[in-house]
Image 1: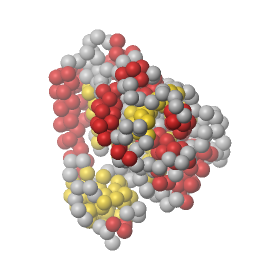
Image 2: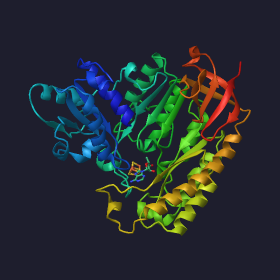
Image 3: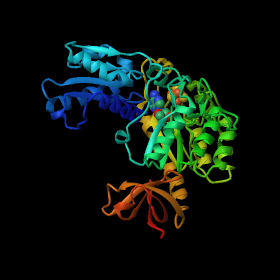
Image 4: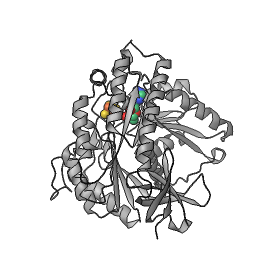
Length: 430
Ligand code: 5AD
Ligand code: SF4
């Protein structure tokens, strides 16, 4: 989401006549985008500004955007006196106006306002983070209020974009040669636009499954989406995926914990049994869908028994990959008030144990790919091994293989010849 926000900000800055540089010594304006989901977010921002300021022009204008900016508010000015402007998470499109104010002589400005009606969403192709894969935000913000999570506070209430606008963006990306789009949002499957223009004629039990069908019908070669919320993950999503080859075979369904007690304390709104029901839609689908998840260890009050339940869940779900996090206390969230914190060392032990469990599962799943043919979108040259290309399969695995740089941007069949712990290696099938 932050990458998408940066792309949008750069597009609006360029429209106002700015040019981009990644050299601090050449920049007249220096802007940091920030994330506050975990860890010492504010400290990271101060440290980064410290590094940059040593190299930058003495007259440079400094700004901060993103979640840390939204949450810190004007107190940021006191802690970082060099800062000139602060743009909240919905103020990205007004950043050129904030800079103009500073250049007109104001010392400090901030904007924590909402998005404005009719704001343009188009992103210049050159500002996308990648040339062949594009992110399309479809839902912003979140209403779920899981007790550990800062997102509802930093990104505000959930807002869905209207479908016709999303579809227009997909068509523009197709004509610009994009092969893959990723529909993004904190909870894409909670998608519920104010009006349903653009979805007429597409069947589905929920607006999200109708949107999937509508996007698939544009003919874009590959569509991925992330993140899904378990409670809103209905069988119809899998039905839509089964119908359309271009809806890629990957589902990211964060579970967070395998203990009902902890799930309740997290206020996730589902039980382990509810989650397994969702998983069974995926496991019983017509195709094999890769399944990935997020998990938090060490939520306040998590006992050894709770943790055992989580290990059992991981063993049962057989995830293709798993993003593990140690619980990190976020000020202002309800969980921050809980006192029965799990000691750091215990979190580390649990983290490592789960890592080990998952790595065995993953090794077995990855070994199953050996000798198989995968459809790969070639995204660039491998950073690690010279002469190799890199890309993702439709099941979202990283795969490297030897090939000519002119193949970047194409979708090719690659035979898997070796497996590593987090990626595959292969050779082109002629
Ligand atoms: N502590 C640890 N992990 C967190 N996540 C969100 N908030 C926290 C927190 N306070 C994790 C969740 C989420 C992912 C994006 O980050 O697992 O799915
Ligand atoms: Fe945070 Fe929960 Fe919303 Fe995900 S669903 S963004 S974890 S509040």
